[in-house]
Amino acid sequence: MKFNKVHSLQEIANLLKCESIGDKNFEVLGMNEIHVVERGDIVFVDHPKYYDKALKSAATIILINKKVDCPEGKALLISDDPFRDFNKLTKHFKPFQSCNVSVAASAIVGQGTVIQPNSFVGNHVVIGRNCMIHSNVSIYDYTVIGDNVIIHAGTILGADAFYYKKREEGFDQLLSCGRVVIKDNVGIGALCTIDKGVTGDTIIGEGTKIDNQVHVGHDTVIGKKCLIASQTGIAGCVIIEDEVTIWGQVGTTSGITIGEKAVILGQTGVTKSVEGGKTYFGTPIEESREKLKQLANIKKIPEILNKLK
Image (cartoon, rainbow, N blue to C red):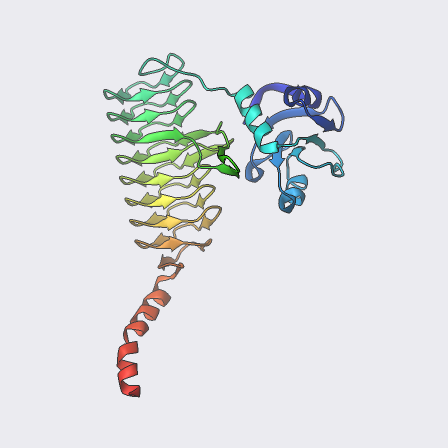
């Protein structure tokens, strides 16, 4: 998330009531998660295992829970609880806005777009031309939808990321301030859920078609002209490249990449990144021909045991 104006390191430190290390006038442009940070961004880290990754990332302001050497050209914010303070920044720079009408006054709806009854279009949503939004669709704040998009009944765009920190008293949620971005000519089936990014965008690429009851996790990026069949669950921070086909009841782990033109057969568990241009099956995932050979050999085990007897 980029701020609407440039802030200084001292301004952010005052807001969080924490110590800063670096030039007090150091420019702060926004805040992001580690996988999408850019120069001028704040990133938070609260575990020694990830200190080095955060300090060496593209982020130039590190919100951290220990005093460490500050890398050249960067600044530090020292906090006793970076997770809490990252949420504090979200609440300050992108607070929740309530809305008591079906289509928010700040929403922009393109010419020729139809919105059926009982749908909700939130604050600062942008919908392109000639879209069809069927009944009972919920489109959360700041969602961006291109032209010629079809969204079927009951679908929800922009719910919070499934991202929690375990504490003694329970689970503490990392607040989401990202967006969902739907490109032109996308089709989304009934009862789908597409979560917004924590600080960045969850993106569905141009021409992609999604069947009913599909879940897409936060910060996932789906490429152009993909086909995703029903009851598929895609975790957060997944990259699905162009023209990938995913059949029904597939599940993925987070942070992986599915290569261009890959085909994932039904009920596969995508436990790791896979190359494009191949067909895959099974859990753990393997190329389909190899997996089917293994299953055929397993069927021969009773016959082999009988011969040994």
